[in-house]
Image 1 (tube, rainbow, N blue to C red):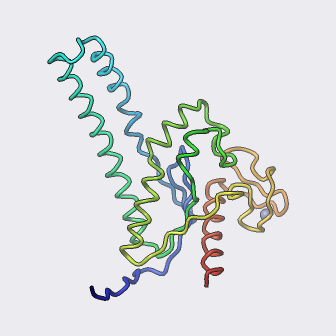
Image 2 (image 1 turned 135 degrees about the vertical axis):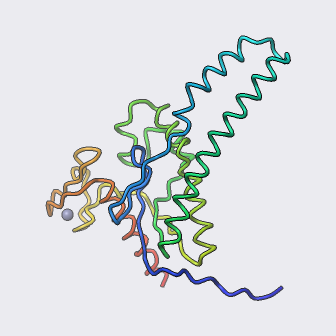
Image 3 (image 1 turned 180 degrees about the horizontal axis):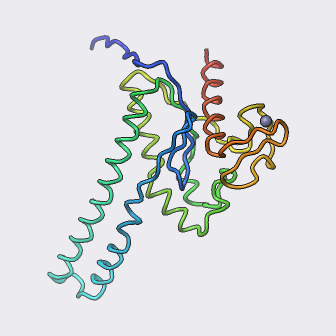
Length: 217
Ligand SMILES: [Zn+2]
């Protein structure tokens, strides 16, 4: 047993991340990252392979061969997703000592879909569509990656309470459902601050991360 020096993150920067459907991430620096829907792109192919499988005699040689094809496509999809999430999370973790994101409880959300998460599920067409997107993008996986990569580098990942992050004005802190008129636009009914809704949320998430940090000293 020996003492290991705690790594020190090379950066002093902090960032807030809003996770979404159409934009995988929106940052408090006003950048955004598109999702990579590896499953969506491959699901037609998968469905076709599945139909072919159903026409084959159960446990026959051809059935087994077809089954292997399906497994191969599944792992191909998973690999693409992993690679993409690794690239994103490594880049963010290298640049920021403190990362704040919502504590999503992704599992719960994929069960209910309509969303305990305020507006996020409201404008999505079908429940299954939302579920698929969440699973496809692997929000939970992304948060896990951020968490251990921050630990490696001596940085921090703050998971903040997602309540009101989309209804709060990041400028004057006024909270109102009416602040959020559409999915993409935020307009504060009190101070008239106007911003992209995801960007406003990312700023609130960052502020919440700072608040938790200072409360913990
Ligand atoms: Zn305001």
